[in-house]
Length: 78
Figure 1 (cartoon, rainbow, N blue to C red):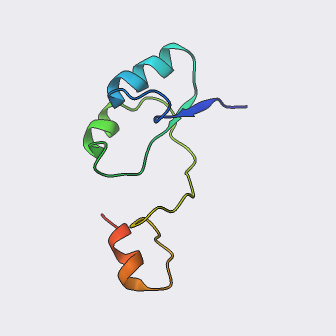
Figure 2 (tube, helix red, strand yellow; figure 1 turned 30 degrees about the horizontal axis):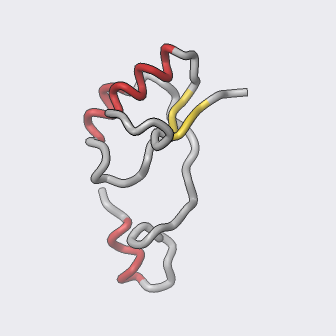
């Protein structure tokens, strides 16, 4: 069994969250998918834990499978 936690549990910089979880023996971290919250390059450099899983909660602007392409397309960022 692997143990992970979502980053919204403790509102702190992602670097602190990753370091704290590693120190406490967690196997992974579930990171918020909001691109405004985290710099992907910084997370890639910091991440030494296994990153797995995903939240299927679709909030406004995040529904990538919406039937209307005008709604779903903005959620698909590269």
